[in-house]
Image 1 (cartoon, helix red, strand yellow):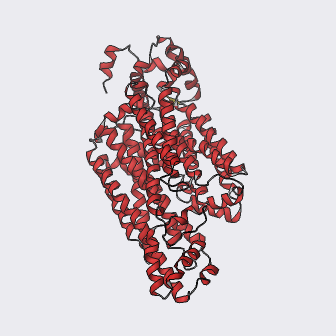
Image 2: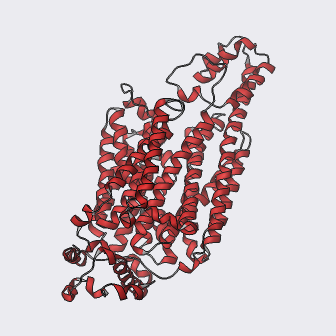
Image 3: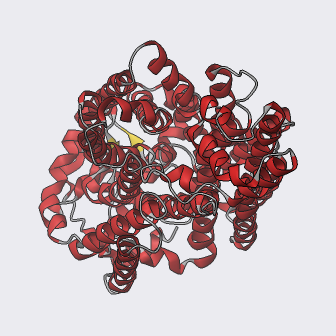
Length: 618
């Protein structure tokens, strides 16, 4: 730290200056010396943790704050994967009279989450962590109430914007918990928060299907409401972080907000993500709607970068962080690639299980359990590997090995076929395990490579890039998987977008298998129509069909799916190589794994006493 050098040019400030009992000491801090104030607060927090040891984790307000983050993170996971997995039942219940495409569910969630990361990370540096988290948690509560009681798809989709904003905020647990821990144990704090989120993180889809079968899909949102209410109450009662933002005059800081940067960021992300995630389905990639949104969104984002270069520290999107190429820049690339890999697995794996491993009379429980291997891997990587990060003590090498591990097992998934189910289960779990670990490593490093005053900004910027890149990954994955038309199908229901664009590999496998088994060439179109309909009656009505042909077609169909999904996993390998190269280029950060603690949670009386500091920061 350059604390002594700053003290020569700025007014002296001590810990006593920021406590209620010493307000008479004539504090004259300004936003310009907030870094010095943040350092002084860190000195106090570090001294406190050194004095009490690990007992600080069970102090009522610290424990309650971590519990608030844990319930919030549960909601972040529970609010997306479970409803996404049963969206077909939700649409059947409330979407019959709506023109809204159900695919917009994930689009709205992604947009909200991306913006939530950025807004919470940046605004919490100005207005304080406490109230920003309370407001965004309230967004999630309101959104879940609207979604859970909605009777039309338009209202349901709209509610997910609010829930997405809350998800972005709740995923900021990594820095909210990390800044309460010593630098060398940041990931232990994250692991503590994630530990109790197993039902939402790993088993959400399974539980959601159970609710649909035995109760109602609305119970997904009732459970969300209960957990979010607990999180909100704990934030209100327990979360009083002692931070430099308490000393800001909020009105003056609001006047200095980069509103143009905020507008360009929101407009750019909304348009770009909408274009990427609606390309292919429901709109063709070449359509004016998709191209218009992608191009205009890209222009806004380019304009944002140019604008922010001239805004200095007032920039809303912290473009200056990317000047640290070997620190923040390389770490951001690793995080973004992890986002793409997560999307590839979390979206593709459940569909692969459904298409390739649901034959032979498998129950929905068995299929649902198999689909959970990705979630268990992510959770295990965060909890068990994350807790070892500090004791291992070689963050750069740990990140390199994690990326190699991820790339190797995602590549191994390309060899999955209908006959090696056990291999597929093991590889999917082992591929997801390092992804959760990488997510937390990059989250911790994002906090280490900046000063304490920019922890939220750094993490929020990285999270925004991660989720935004993940949206691009979604577009790539779905374009590869569903981007080809069957040349044999000329007439199809316009609403059946997914089946109209399933991979050409199915055609390459099914056509020769059917012809070799004796099906007349003139019946190929009828055969595919029956496959699309998933109807045994339609299959039996195909001219020239018999049991032997049906068996051959069924085997070819599974082989075609295996070949199609293989492209997805091959496509992710270059991204894994890029992430590994970025980890190699990352500058050494092991020396930053110290006992330094950026913040501490104080009691409400002390927190409210510090409000008097606002009048000194005009």
